[in-house]
Image (cartoon, rainbow, N blue to C red):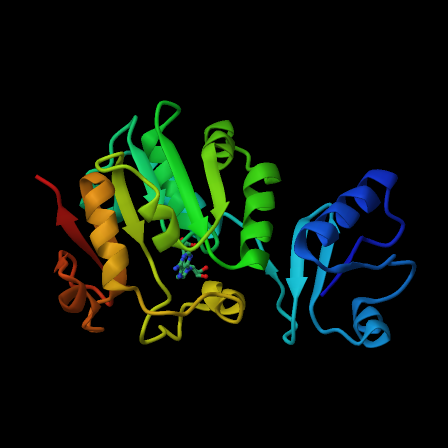
Length: 256
Ligand SMILES: C[S@@+](CC[C@H](N)C(=O)[O-])C[C@H]1O[C@@H](n2cnc3c(N)ncnc32)[C@H](O)[C@@H]1O
């Protein structure tokens, strides 16, 4: 993978890109006046991360880069601000002050909604097993600014961890968090979910294991929740009661 800057970078941007290259075990290459296409060709590498004022953009084969944007989370938070509620928050019974572990961070949208709902007294830890995704989203959560200070604060409250969720859950004590949440890559992809398409190539597509659910049930005080395609059979396989009968559904296992 190559990491580069915008054309005419500041010394800080160069330093930042160099640091990211080191973290990712990638090659830092000075951008000069080169187009991204030319850089890829010169260095014979299709995997390219650009660190510029718009945040991190990761290019692989396709034209559409992967980048962080609160997108749907922003819309959902606006609805919550108006008192309209959010299905994920309703189904998990998430309250201000809760501790949430989001086992499948992805682009961080669900984590942002949780972080807004738990407020400054709560906490959200978002786990991602894939390094590039982890880095792009971690940096987005750290630096992205919306027009709303409470949303910015929610982004900053999320602690990202680069880890497989089973390894992470195994290290947590019994009943040490309120909510454990899973949103794995769907067994049957939903084709109209274009927001997730640049993510698909990089994401860990492994099926959710029963061992992860067992560990989640051990560490959760309130509930374990799963988002899945309603007809995938995953709710039944993993022991969840599915509450919503939409195309995409949430299942929960409520703790006593
Ligand atoms: C469908 S996406 C999650 C989308 C996310 N809920 C959002 O709102 O943006 C699933 C993510 O979980 C990650 N993932 C899958 N299995 C994992 C595991 N065992 N440990 C940690 N992350 C995992 C994938 O790499 C992917 O980024």
